[in-house]
Length: 169
Image (spheres, rainbow, N blue to C red):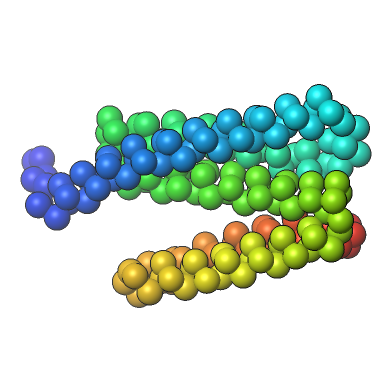
């Protein structure tokens, strides 16, 4: 027997579709920015990418993550699904973290190590504040999920960004 959707479920699916359109624009912008930064570095100083494995990998990985975030969001417009929404959200967020790590590493490499460290400290601080704000706007279950998500993202930023800039590895 086919399950009849409730009004609440229909509203949630409609919200997913509306949210998807907005996210497609943001994701597309980040794809272009990531590709532009990569192209700019390759044309000016490709040795920088050869010498800095962590920088090159994170910048390169951010591109397919943003692209697949777009693919998932586009799919939401056709077929609303919480799983696809979650996939799009995670791929965008991971792409954003890797992209921001790349920017911080570039700042520390091309400008000054101290400015790169300041960049990462501000980024981590903003991640914490954003996580607290978003967590308070939703239910307790979402709050726990956001805490776990924020811990993962902050950990990735520290391990693949800040510690790299500090020369720990």
